[in-house]
Image (cartoon, rainbow, N blue to C red; front, side):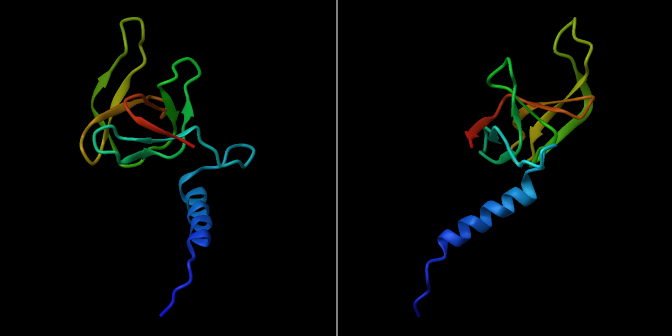
Length: 117
């Protein structure tokens, strides 16, 4: 039997699902992201909604990650002058380090592959 091509309709439905399920609205009710971030070790998506760091172009900030685990067994500091404590964030699939989580719950992702949106 002949099956009509529904790819176009499927694309719209997929786009709507991503918007509804993976992107949080901002204060203006916009569902936006600067990139989709993937693990460099296994290409698993680790973040669907993030903001590019204003000063460090290869760093991203996010309030939510996917397919990641946070290592709370130890705390990290970026330097002697920096008293902020961080926890390592790793890919749940392959264990690669992908970033840090600060005490305010913000993820700082810098060892990732980005896909521009």
